[in-house]
Length: 209
Image (cartoon, rainbow, N blue to C red; front, side, top):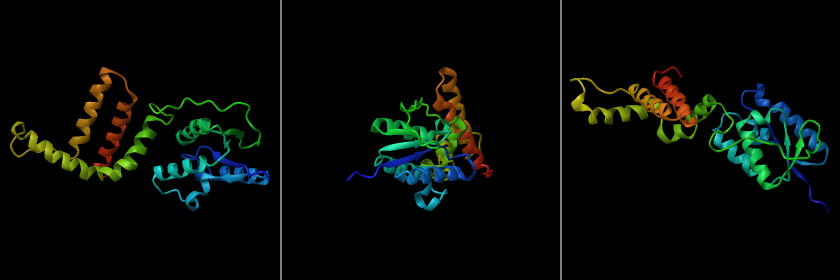
């Protein structure tokens, strides 16, 4: 008896209408009709889209590790998550299929993904970091920077004018200055990500978001 083949649907979600779920579901239907058992990330958690990004990634990697093949939706190469999944699928020796035609690809898809620079934009990366695990680890920026400001005030007390104190808003602005100084010395993408991230946290401190 031949074991059921299992295929994983990979493609872009972020920035697409309805998170691109209709394309995922249509591809899943096509492969199920062709006799495949399908792992469709759009079906995870009942279709919820409000969970932390790392929660989805852990679930997706677990699904992918149990598959024999991957079906690629258009635009996958512009998705940080899908590109990462492709790298893992290549390492696992999976076969690759075009999700729309159902045809097997002769060669694995090529990707320029690396842990150093990824494929997401600087702004997308900064937004993901400031909204994900770091928020859980450090708390809201207003609270985190208020604690830092109190310590900086103590350290710099002898240099501050009487009655003056470092504020929560001063902290991200000073950290941006540190990153700018490092970027002037040598370009590093992480500097730009951190500058964007600190700018966003400054907006949070100001109550803009």
